[in-house]
Length: 133
Image (cartoon, rainbow, N blue to C red; front, side, top):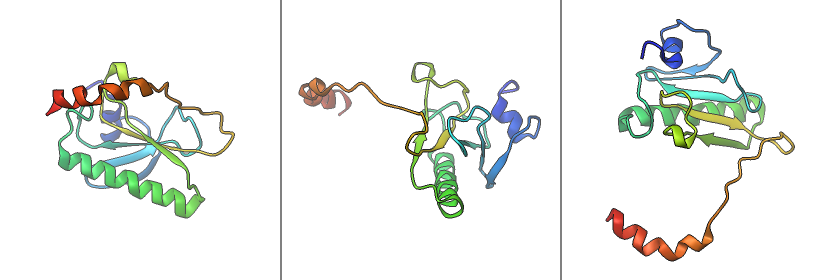
């Protein structure tokens, strides 16, 4: 945790541009923004990802995601956003401190998060559900 950049931000050992803060969560502008007002929301305690963060802390983070989103809607007229969280290296998580991205979107912003879909996998749904029941 000593090398975690987000922990350093919380301890005020690294620079950040605070958007909003609560007792348990912190929102700040991403230094590698995909769009204007691209914001990160993190728990103040160090948790690696969705598998690690307790539900109580996750709730606090999600509440702050909502507050920041509503702030952007009210103050900036932003009505289109993506909320993204990656958990694990293969899921493209780069900073291993749980976090959510709020990415405001507008037509022509040059961003394109589009998945390759596999409708043929629907035939496996019953078997898939058997594995988790």
